[in-house]
Length: 417
Figure 1 (cartoon, rainbow, N blue to C red):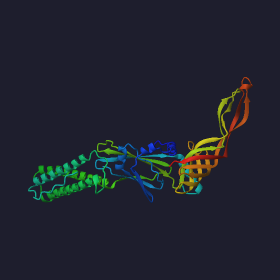
Figure 2 (cartoon, helix red, strand yellow):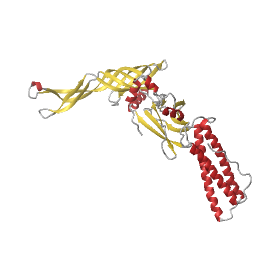
Figure 3 (cartoon, rainbow, N blue to C red):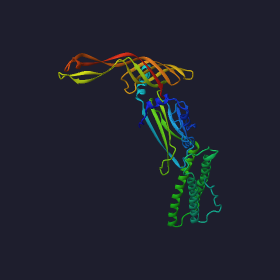
Figure 4 (cartoon, rainbow, N blue to C red):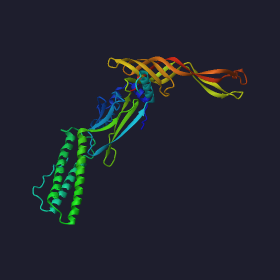
C-alpha cells in the first residue's frame, strides 16, 4: 500500500532552522527508539512516553534517522501498553522513491555488483460428599474465578498505558493478579480431576449438569490462558515483524489501540523510516543549473497549409530539481565529506543524467559540479513566412532534430534521509 509522501516537504523541513518556539513544541521524551544488531533493527515504542507527549500536546519526533538498509530485518516492540484490555491494529505503508531506485541501480552497475484481582480463595479442606455437591463446588469456584477476573478487567478497562516494570507500578499489579489467576487455574483443574476420578453421576440429569459445568470450566481456563498471554505482553512487550524493505522505500508504521469492542483508543503511534540501499550511498535533492539549452516548439499551420514548428521557448541554460546519489567518504563525524555523484531529474527520472563530484558540509549540505547528458531540440530548415507585411514575419522550421549533448552543471542540494 502506498502512502502520499513529499520528498520536497522533507527537504524544506531540513532547510528550515528550528526556532526556539518550534523546539519548545517538540516532545522531549523518546517514545520511539531503535536498537540495531547484525541484520536486525528493533523499533521500540514506549506507550507511556507517547501518552506523556500527547497529554502535553507536543508531537514526538517520529522520523528515525538511524540508517536502515534493505538487508536489515525490522521489527517493532511495544512496551507499557495495556494488552489486557486492548489490542493493537498495525498498518504499514510503503512509498517507493523511484529516483533513488534508479540511481542505486546505476551505482550497482557502475561498481559491477550483482543486482486488581482478589487473592485466590483457599480450597475447602472437607471432601465433597456426593457427585452433586462436588459438581456444585466446582461450578461455584468457576463463578468466583470469573468474578475476580471480570473485576480486574473492569478496573483496567480505560487504561491504555501501564507504567512500571515487573517489580513496580501497573505492570507488577498485572503480574500479581495473573499469579492469583494461576491459582484459580490449579483449583479448577483439581475440582475437575476430583469429580471425574472419585464420583460418578447417578442420573442422566446429573450427566447433563456435568456437561454444562465442564463447558464453563473450559471457557474459564481459556480466559485465564488469554489473560496470561496478555500479562506476558505487558511484562515483555509485543513484537511485530516488518521485515526487509527494498532500498529507496519510505516505510510508515501506524499502531492504533483497539478495545475489545473495536473502539479506537488514543494516542496512536506513528513512526517512519527510510530503507537505504545496501551500498553506503547518500541521497540528496536540490537544484542544478546547466548549460544545456532548453528549447521547445509548438506545431503551427503555415500559409501554405503545411505543418511547421514555431519556437515557444529558447533558453540557453537549464535549471531543474535533481535527485543525487553519492558514494564517498566523510570526516569529522560526518561534518564534511567528498563523494562521486550521479543524479537525474527528480520529476522526470532518466530524462537527464548527471555525473560529477560532490563536497558535503554541515552533514546535510552538498555542492556538486560535473557534466549532464541531455537532449537538445535543434530546429532544421528555417522558413520565413510573411503574413500581410514584413512586420508580421515569423520564422518557422520544417523539422526538429533531437541531439544528445554533455554540458557542464553545478548544483546545491541537501540530504533528505
